[in-house]
Image 1: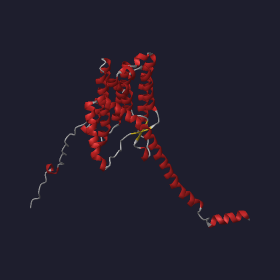
Image 2: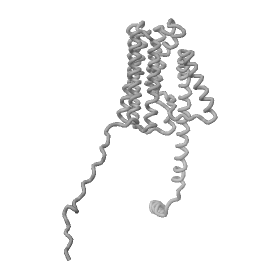
Image 3: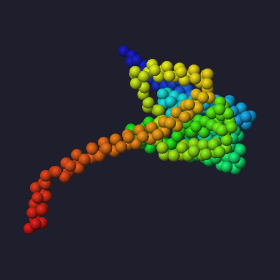
Image 4: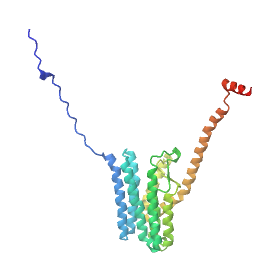
Amino acid sequence: MKRPVFKPAVFRKRRARRPHPRLKGLSINHLLPNVLTVLALCSGLTAIRFAMHERWEQAVVCIVIAAIFDALDGRIARLLNGQSKFGAELDSLSDVISFGVAPAFMMYLWALNGAGSLGWIAAMAYAVCAALRLARFNSRLDVDLPPWAFNYFTGVPAPAGAGLAILPMVIGFEAGPDIAGHPAVVVPWTLAMGGLMVSTLPTFSFKGMRVPTQYVVPGLVGVGLLAASLVSQPWWTLAFLGLAYLASLPFSVAQFRKLQQAAQMMKETEETPVEEAVVSAPETPSSQETTKTAND
């Protein structure tokens, strides 16, 4: 009986199939927030262009559009899990231009130049305050805040500060620039808005705000009325929103202090039973013997 002849080729190792090549690069989810940030930057730069041609209304609209893009990019990044260090840095650079340089440039060309050097100082001070506010925000990104402080900003955020800075211009569209655009009004107003941005006042962030179920329908009706007001009376509506935000600052400070005091009282309540248990603990036999020996 012949033995079977085994050919070496039969036992050759099969070559592993090459996996399909994967596409390198960022996904759309990671890219979309950065696209919105770039659009906000372009809108801020366009506001500067309109201000150079004294087209003030279009410049204000560009600032509003930049604020909308700025509000969307962060939320979309969190929803799509597209947060990145690059996006955070790009967002801050965009905010410096759109909400720091652009409003200062607009206000200087509109009214601050009438105050001479003092007006230029006010414009520069506002832009510097915006940059400092954003630098402080970036330095605290990795700081763990207590749960009760999560819904608060430190100082007025840059988009809100920009809206408040150009508030005299918005009011001047309807009431006239004689009073709203007077250097005696605009110079201290611009300095005050810059000071609010670098202040330590706790302001509402509206990040974790939840609408109760019974207020959902009235809230949607209010959004519809707000949209109708923006279409029919855009400047008075924007002025009302700015003044309403200013009026909310004392309430945000009071609410923050109330939560801070409640957290402090809760902490003291938790520490008190532990201290009482340590004081009222009975002496151990070894400690009693040590005390007796010392007395002898």
